[in-house]
Every structure is written in C-alpha cells, then in structure tokens.
Image 1: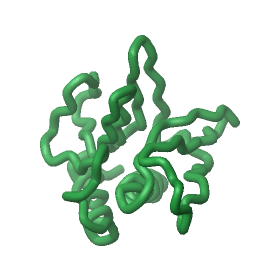
Image 2: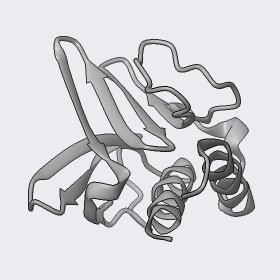
Image 3: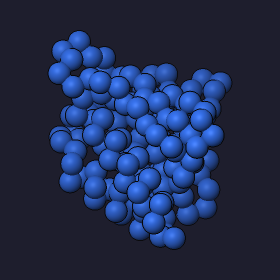
Length: 137
C-alpha cells in the first residue's frame, strides 16, 4: 500500500498534467496544504481537491470523498467506488457552473456530490480516477 503522501503526490501530478487554467476555476481548487478547514480527516489522510460553493463543500482526499452542507454530511471511501457518472456537458452552451456527479458504491448505493463543470471538472475527474487506480494496486 502506498503512503498517503505518495498517493497525494501522484494524484496532484496527474491533475496538473491534464487540467487547464486552474486559476480561472470558480469553485474548485487543488489543495496544497495538509489541512482542510471544516473537515475532520483521519491521521495521515491528505486533502487533494476541493469544490466550495455557497451551499456545500466537497473534498476529495487520499482516502475518501466527503461533502458537507448545512446540517448534512455524506461520504464514501475511494475503495468503495464501483463507478462514476459525471454527466454529459461537453459542448452544452447552457451548462450550469455547478452540477452533481454520481458515485455507485460496491454495495450499489448511489451518492451524489457537487462538482464544477467546464475546465475545472477535469481536476475532479483526474483526482478520483487516479486515486481509484492507485488504491487497486
């Protein structure tokens, strides 16, 4: 099993290789510190990618996806993800800035989390896909 620092470094490198213009993202950002304000992380777990809107904060860590909103919290382990559905937004001129993506867990539970559409979505997609691959090896 790779260390959380190794998972973090490999995932950040993958995001930076594929993401375009992170300085223009409205709600998303790559996390460059070991803390994530408002989230209770396990020891050694590192924050990787954050989507912060007026209604919710969604965090991808080296171990989980966590979302908090007023009076509500949900999460799933990266290792429990069976499939993801980000929707079809490419070429849609009326796409919203924020939308939901769906995770299907290995227990066939469906969980939705927020994500930023457009160029920022690539950061989230590469964060989740890279972590899934790394956890399988």
